[in-house]
Image (cartoon, rainbow, N blue to C red; front, side):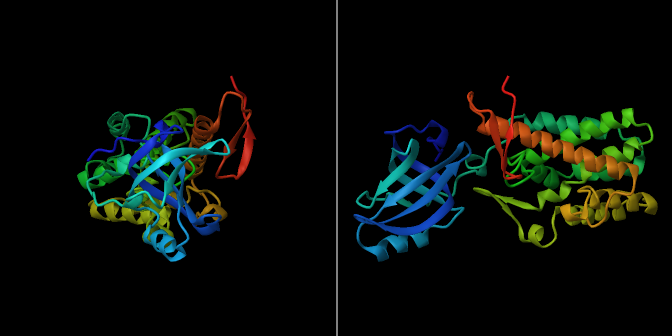
Length: 326
């Protein structure tokens, strides 16, 4: 059954009867008429608080609360109300089937996780075009081994770049990779000292490990592999496996490729096991930093700025930054 009601369309007074994903939970508390608990539910268009107003049977309210898990899809039957100027969904205990686990498994993660504002197929086509300009045959072969792998490409197109800060949506990894590859392509013209093929190949490859870093069902969550190793190490291993499979792949070139991938975060405290020691490694680190900072600022501006605001909240830094509203 197709989802019909989205968070961005809700207004005070609306009746809600649709499925949403649980994003956050807050334990039951007592109030004048009994016990209540709060959730945050959402879909691809945003999140909204939900309040379940229970009766005096604390055990019943707690049992219901404990049966609901973050990340699960639930059917909600409630009313959109307003509290302190913000809308929320209110459910009363008397309401039959006010909130319950969805028995429908025929849903797509696209309903609950935002997608890139850019066309995914167009971005992938442009990335393929850039990859075809790599002249060094060994580098071209290792890049192509990923981009012609149908199973990998399917995951790559769907993967987010991050969980919170920027490009945190379906297609985000592809979008981020394309941006960095375009910067690398242009930077190699400005600095002829750079090995363009090595830099461009590294720009395309260095975040490929993120296809194994996140799970995308109703929310973006880190995998166990990501928590124990991180995408940098995962990626280096993935690329090393591919170079090992290519006959006569130059050992020194494979080593340089591994170094650039492992050092692309730059500093040790930022997660790099080795600081950049090649021109291309230094270049990729700053390309990566520019892409993250610029995209993060633009996304924050888009999401949080209203016409009368002169500050935007940057979640990664935990601060507000001044902007010029033009």
